[in-house]
Amino acid sequence: MFLHFIPLLLAAQSIDSAPPHHAPRTVAIDERLARDAGLRLGDTLVLTPMPGGAGDTVIVAALVRRPRDPSEVARGAYRIRVHLDELQQLVGYGERVERFAIATRGSSGADSALRAIDASAFGFRAFSSREIAVESSTTFLVVSRFHRAIGVITIVASAVFLLCIMLLKVDERRRDVAALRLMGISSGTVVRGVVLESALIATCGSIAGVGLGALVSAFVNWHYQRVYRTPLTFSLVTGDIVVIAVGLSLGLGLAAGWLAAQRLVRQPPLSLFGR
Image (cartoon, rainbow, N blue to C red; front, side):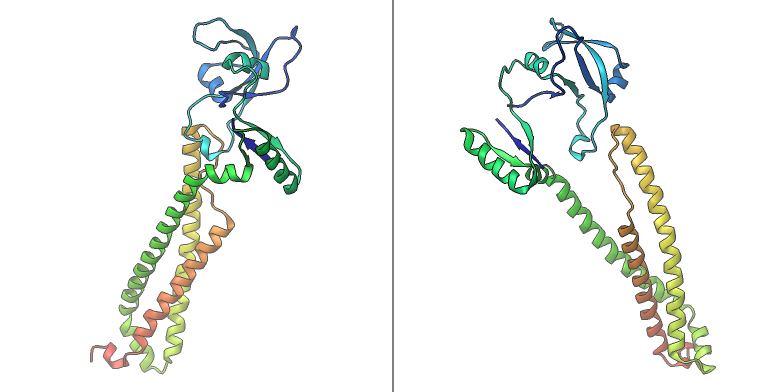
């Protein structure tokens, strides 16, 4: 578990402690920056607090991949990781920092660390990693609820549409149903036949829908991962989603077929012939 607390904002992240002064200084750069600027491992850079000013010469020692963080997707800024003393010289903060993280063991250790940090000095405010995640994910929660509402409306509308289609399709076979009834076929058998046909159609539709969803999901991930240059997964078809989709399809198909068949078999056979 991590704890974050805020007293000034740092423009970069620190890496391991500084190497001996006789060794060349190293930095780790964003792989997007390396691709856009044509940089490679071993290249020499000059870090300065202002463009065109004097600075320190450093060597690119590592490339850092963008994290799978939704809050980082829309940010176009590049990241460079430098040693802590180098960062202090660049930002000119001296011994001040705005934010750092502390790893603790167990929830009890996290609670005691929170209380100790809050009570250490005026202006310190400690937050648990869970609180930080909840606060930064508020926008995504709103979007998730919005998508859920759209999904419910779509399911209701599709159910009504499916029922209307089934009523029309079954009504077109009224003469066939009338002939079966006059031959002595019971209404229950007719209903079971219609429901079985509806289940078969719903199963085929479910398979086609799952395949189409997987293809669309793969295309969405391919497109937006290239646009934002991130390994983040934008669309995901999971087993739970497949089970829910197939269950809804079968349930709505069976219900629509049963209602349409009941409407038809309740009429006298001769009236189905128009007499």
